[in-house]
Length: 468
Image (cartoon, rainbow, N blue to C red):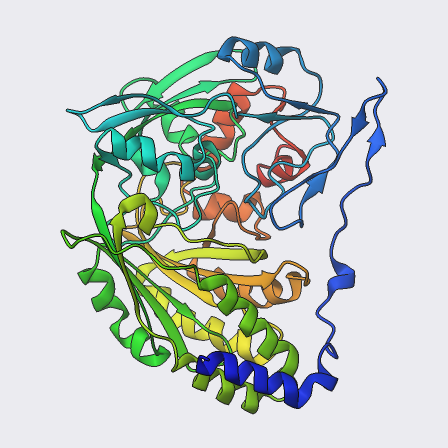
């Protein structure tokens, strides 16, 4: 038996009568609307995002099979139209009582160019289903997020990213896009063709129309080595810049209410394949929850037990094809807030967030995630204009109210000009966003030009863009 299992089990035996004595705000969580019968007698079912926090009861769910059918839908359907991917955004980008559009028929590898190392991909392709066909074509994504359930269109729309000081977010690999607008126009765009539309559509929150295909700049397929280890968190902070500079990909996790962190590096290698073993992350997170449930009232014992358990963590190494190395299983659901900051502000801010989290929120057990991302020039990219950005993500278990935690953490980022991940929860409005994104007003003008009637805007996006 691992020391972690022994310690968690021992804590359970010792204090089981006290378990569940804390209220973590479950009663304040939003509930999905009840199913109902539509005007034509059809049964309408609620849509929910992955965490269950966002929901709506759309009157129509459609999945056009061709761009012509999609264009006709966008011009003929009444009310709001919102594209939907895998529902991995925590902000209310999708919810509408009108129409949601699935891109499941716009999926898969369409064509590839071995010389240019490019691939044309259906925008509705899930990232987890893109790896194998790209690898068979001799190609690899330049970088990949650690959750691969998202669609390509949804990932780009929200500036979803992996980590690496020299690696941009997923949208930076796009060299050309095809967009079907709410007026029925089909626009091909790139840096050379309709460049303003291209820079706006790279990160669009799904508000300019519906992406149907993306041309990706890739690299030759490659084997990657992934290493995971536990280290004193103060030591990881001291070594952060060195580790980020030395490795293709580097990220670290701060485990709250303890003194240790977790580090992950990923690098190209010629070493023989050593497949990843069974996923440990989900069990480890639930062990952290058990310790929280049992000992949040006794913080010194919780810290001691957590530190002892973390010392038992054995370093992991795996070598495999790139698409089997980058992503990880995320079976334990949560809600998330993630902000992006100038790189020089990252580590001091990490320490301030950690202090606030531990002082005010004994209920938090999810590790805090710290990453770095190369800057770019897409109009709504949170990394726009930065050489490198730092990223801090905090999480709350999906059954617990995330708002108290997020209300305490979010103000820390504001004096630093923090920019939110578009798919993660935040409270910024159009005035603040216009100050932090130099091309924000240009984007809003482009949105109004391509969607003059505001058909792609639900209530949340109308408020976000200041369109009433």
